[in-house]
Amino acid sequence: MSRPDARAPRAGTPGNLLTAALCFVILVVSIQQTVVLPLSGVISSQLGIGTTAVGWTLTAGFLAAAVMTPVAGRLADLRSKKIVLLAVLGIVLAGSVVAAVTESLPLLIVARILQGVSFAAFPVSLAIVREELAPEKLASAMGLLSGTLGFGGAVGMVLTGLVVPDGADYRHAFWLAAALTVVAIVLVIVIVPARANPATGRVDWVGAALLGTGLVLILLPLSEGGTWGWASARTLGCALVGVVVLVSWFVLERRIPHPLVPTEMLTHRPVLCTHLAGLLVGAGMFVNITTLTYFVQTSRENTGYGFGANPMESGLVYILPGASVGVIASICSGTLITRFGARNVMAAAGVLGVVGFGSLIVAHDLSWQVIAGSMVASAFTSLAYAAMPALLNAEVSRDNTGVANSVNSIARTVGSSVASAVLATLLAGLTIGDTHFARVDAYLIAFGFGVVCAVVSTVLVYIGGGGRRIPRTREDGTSSDQSASFASMSRADSAVLGSHSTS
Image (cartoon, rainbow, N blue to C red; front, side, top):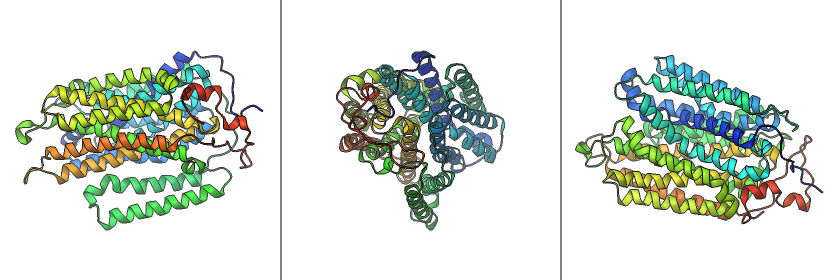
């Protein structure tokens, strides 16, 4: 009996061209995520607002991602993936244009909400390559897409520094984001095949509303706890209500025939462990890029550490080398996963994460030390990002690819929010005397947090191991027939995970 999701290679668009186009889409997504990070001071100055208010431009993107990513992932599993991807990019383009023309903080936050929808393009793109590419090309393509998400944020910060030098209008960065989004839309229209989706089912809009509400209520106190007070009634109450809503959502999903997220994706050990690993890798990426940016922009005259770099210098001198390493790691990831297996690649990534963040703890007085440590940490992020979709795709059917990677994307978003909260608390709590300058200890603790993320994410992947594959669900809500061949790996999964993977 043949596997339910076994497939013959598609004919049509060359695989390399499709992969290149989707990598550009993911690059645009990453730029949307980090475009405001190096501009917080500039936006604060030019709009005449406080840094706390500017922080909402980052929080808004996280919240939008939490709400829209699972919906887009489910739509991609049920509808034309090309149409879903174009819809996501259209919303992102609208947000970029609004951000580029507005002079109001409320409108800028609205724009960032629209740009935050960009997170949803990643799982949709992964679903496209799994549907379109031949098995022997799948590992390389997924590695490139995932690695691009890992290093693309650094590329975004470099480009932001180039288009917004000292004294320039911050809106130039959003015009750049809009232009890049237009190019991505054109590439999708021309290159991505328009293919009807044979899958059946519907979108669980009630579940989407509950999941989005619960995630917003969890992410808000993580993002604003430093301002509200971590022990305040608002912070604790918001988090508690969020937990209650998410529990209610989980109970609902177990009882309906067409859940937004099959609950097996949250209880099946290999998948759950991969999602938890994604949370930690997302936190590690944020620590690497954001902590490094703040560190190098700090004036040594005032604090005894840092290099007083402006946004352009921090991007070109300190961030670009790590981004370059991320590109190389992404290009190599597919071959490494195919030859050694995704779990072994994840283990190697964890070692690189420990070395990179660990070196930043012990050696950070010279520019080359910081650059070298960040380069190694960037390799950790790119390789880990490349390994996780391969691990997921060995455990879920092709019809659940989009939603499975959507959940993983949400986990990474939550990880970034956790890292953001940790960093904000450290910088605000560990200051030099009565000044607002953070002590160097705050950054060292943050880099130590990066070490923990690298170690635990790797351990989780091995704890998860390989198990019985999650079945696809028929339209009547029951599981597909499970044969021995269905529980084993197909040629496509072997191409993704390599000969050392387990099933």
